[in-house]
Image 1 (cartoon, rainbow, N blue to C red):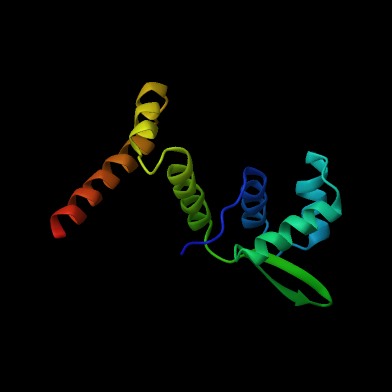
Image 2 (cartoon, rainbow, N blue to C red):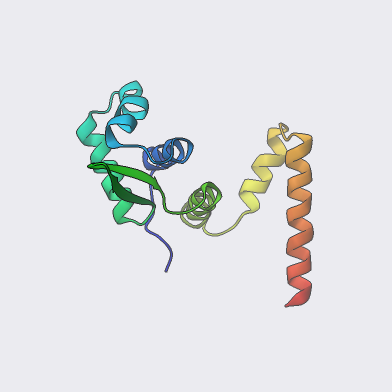
Length: 128
């Protein structure tokens, strides 16, 4: 079974911590929580919930707990996208691909990345 699901606010917090690794609760409350109107206690609760869900780890340094992502930044986003596809799109990526094609704002680098993914998927399919 995969990791527990996370909400939008938790995902934003994880992204912030990924950018500011080894941050204390106070640092995160100041840089992430205050601009969003979140109290320090709320930020601490969110961080501890994410730690309980195995998205964050903490270690004590000079008497202060420092938090960092338990996995690489790409893994958090892949997990969030996977949860979205499963919950919202009933496991089908077709609606998402249709949305992307209608959006019309796909950069050359994003298009190259998508093409590389299609090639990889086709290769994996041939192997199995």
